[in-house]
Length: 450
Image (cartoon, rainbow, N blue to C red):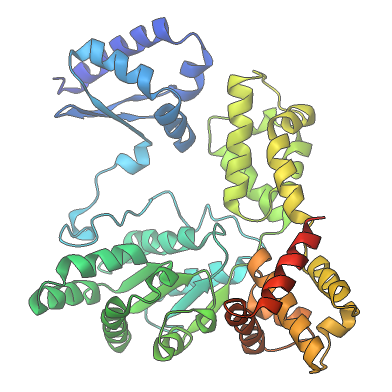
């Protein structure tokens, strides 16, 4: 087994030579294996450093089998291969990691405030995150960030951790997903001593960040532990940061006392990104990949920013599809609009179909179904028929478009979010037993398809 740097270099040269005999596409080496090397080779596990996260992803999917076969034939045994970028392979300072708990909670060192693309939709959240990262526990505690999935909550949390570890010597930060918190509770719930040790470990940190808290809904025993730890952290002046897909008041499966505590600090929302922000995010991703931004028609960037603006994951999906297309099906150096349309037409068709359904279309169809005007549906009248239609419209907007309660309240004449929640819950409850509601919802949904 190779151990020295020279041996690893020679081994990688031999592997590359055999790969060239098995992979005909020259771009495979120029784009994905440029500047690559064996980072480590120990106990039949080989870690290969590559030039970007995109290269690591493509090598791990499209080319993994052929590379493993070549490595096996070169070293004479089965080897498990992993691709990663050099920044992720740097050794971590022992003081920052505790092996006893939250082993699966990994912080990506590349997620920083500097590369978090900012626009009007997320400026407040970034400012709040930067403030508490610089002044943990000094105010705005807890910080609660909520948004739909894929808008950058995790990026901000991990940026806080990276900032604290780099800029605040002596301060300790702990990041975990709520699922990790649940798993730690399950693993240590065999006795009071273990639970106390877990509490002590968590509260020993100066900044504690919990991602996707909504996943702990109805986990009553875990929430009791979380409430205890949460209160202890605040009492000790430690900073707590929580993310969710809903505002504290809209969380289901949580006791009111916990929701109240969540809302007692600073609550900020990340909204759907604006088109210029989406274009800036796309540009940043291209510039940090093996691709050359100069080989993209500027209209392609604007096009993707407009069509895939719901969240960052849509942008990732569109870019990956485009790269895959020009790498495997239509090799080209310059990506123009025709190429982009060819590569993304399936994604665009699906997205456009979804965009045809809007809040106003639902209100119009509900109004027509009950022989009402849209203004009657959204108006203040409490007449029985009008109230039923209004609640059904709210329910469909909420369940079919995932619109926040606060925005639905605004659409319906500025109603409070609690009023909207009550109306939606009433429809959900009625659907279980009331045939009139069941028939109405079914028929309205059919009309919405047309």
